[in-house]
Image (tube, rainbow, N blue to C red):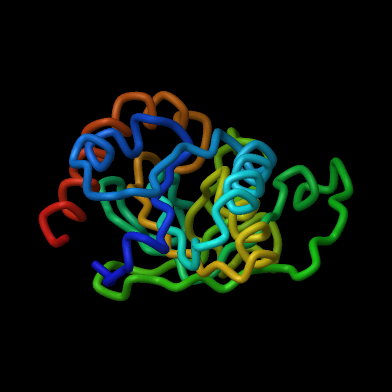
Length: 198
């Protein structure tokens, strides 16, 4: 795992279960949950960084689904290098998405893990996606619900972001049920990987 200065690093996840072992270790002076979804995570992170000006780096622990065309398997651990926010309803032409500026954020990936381009929409994709729904989705490999909001706020505060994500499911109609059965063991495995190295 990448070396971080604990006094300048916020370790976080969307909910307690994603960082419970890290919290129990007592090794991280700045550790807090940011909430589920881009908006909630962005609001909570903005408040945290406003009160803790010494934070220069953020490490996000979470889960994600893999798009089937990516070839990424359930049980993989990913450190995304880039995050977008593309909505499936826009790709299917049933709504219009307001363009993001910038379109994506660069992350600081841990290259000891597989890297991937992450999509962080505001909704969970429930349709069966065997192929990208449009050309702009071809490079997207995984889906997480918080990383775009977190990266947008971190960028405003000049804080770098490294994310560690466990692939709990394939994106699609069974994604939520697969996530429910896989998130905890994979989260613990991911956290233990980090604790073992630190």
